[in-house]
Image (tube, rainbow, N blue to C red):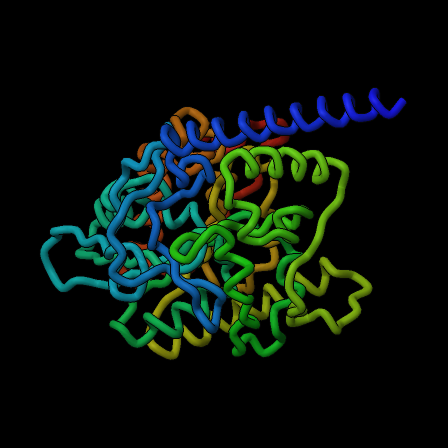
Length: 377
């Protein structure tokens, strides 16, 4: 019995040594042939983001690097201005130049994977009938409420804005429930370590999955270990196991809402009025644009569009263009491709031109006939 136990332990030890040797060999091979940025599916070359006391992270002013294109190779150049925003796009139309700013819209308005001239802001400037300079004030992964405060902090007094386009992408009524009732307070800061899980310079989004949340940067120390841990987290996620990191509560966490959707719509409506009033104080007209996306269900923005206060122009570009966008190739995990951005920028340019010419609110689109395809005119 003692001999068999020793043999079993010896075999176990040999097996563990083989596994360790195989793991070391695999780790070495992967580090030779795979870049860490590619393995971790990072969207930018290192250095694009920095910790920020007010917002958890910010895009680095003056950054020059690359975005990941469709095939996973860093091949699309990106330059950011001193405020960390994409460079402004200007056309060559004659006459005094008007300044337009695009606020919010997450990575879709940021136009991840596109060159400046191909982006929505670039196409808005190119297709406008007026002399325009268009500033993109959207950041990847940052919601509308935060982008509004970033605009006020970094850009509001930068120049005289004639029109502000408010980009709404994949927002829901419930998502506005925790917005502060006075709309003047920036969101509570999120600890930087929640975002900088690999190393300083690149944000990795917290997914709420157990091992990523518990292990922090240790989760990314080994290529082989990352593969095993992410597989386990994927399984746990499908089983509904989630963790929330950080002790910060959302702004409205103390409120008990009998109807979260109703409260969210009320806050959303008030937030639009607040932005419109603040912009009007500086002579800026506001346009709300509901942005199309991949696989959004029909009527996704109907409740938000119906809640826009009277007198504020808006466009439901998902309803208008959603069907047509599928005719063209998207890039980088469903982000707008060049032709899709051209369509969106062109439609926005029509309404921006209308506002610059002193026109009233954009006409609200009629509901499509029953059974009609979205976006078909």
